[in-house]
Image 1 (cartoon, rainbow, N blue to C red):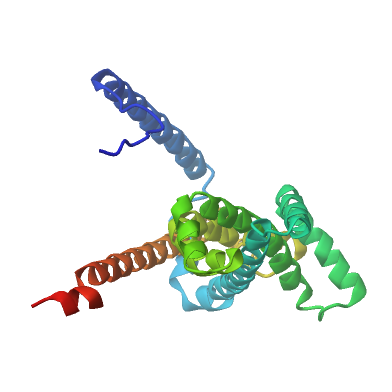
Image 2: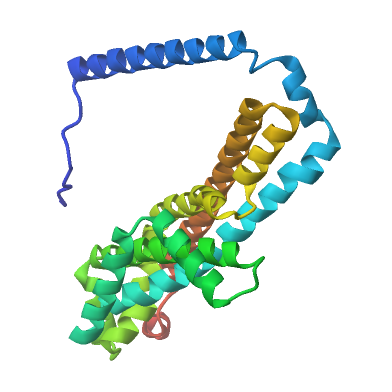
Length: 291
């Protein structure tokens, strides 16, 4: 019989009642705060029906919201791909058998994890602009992508290191027992399992990338928040414009989470199917010994 370690004891009846009571109090306080905020906005005329009418026109969506969405998705998609590459390379570097490689990768990862994303965006925007690294219209995008890649790639590198480290020792021992080297075992056996196990954490980091792309408005990058500000100034409906932008961010993050859940379900189903097929298939020795 195997024993299961738990991080905390299951709550008893009194604890469950206490949790339910605290949850109810929290919901009531949140609802009261929301009511006060909405009431104040209505008193100031910030939620009038006329302020929402521009969102029913195709012009607002074509000239403001859709360009903002394209800018946000462009920066986020490029940053996610580059952050994945950065995280895999430096995450595996932190697991290398070479001490110098581990030290260099550790310094790089810890440094970029400690620097704020906005500070990196501003720094690289100045570097790119003053040295003509990219065209003037590409400098904001390049700075946003650089900042998001370095920070989130460092976090992903730590996820890779911790994900591989959490695997049972038998996985690496099995690879070494069939003649694979330590690096081959890491790439072929441990890393695929670690990526599947840390997929929820990866999705959470992708959500962070998507949200942090809004920081690009500080360095004049034309993304959803920037276009929402412009929309609010043009139609004098700043609060509704920001509410619509927040709703779009929520929808995009939700869709990203749903996509990740489907991928995780597909990977886990395929793994169970493969394991079942391998278990059900008779070995050659067993087939030959069968009458």
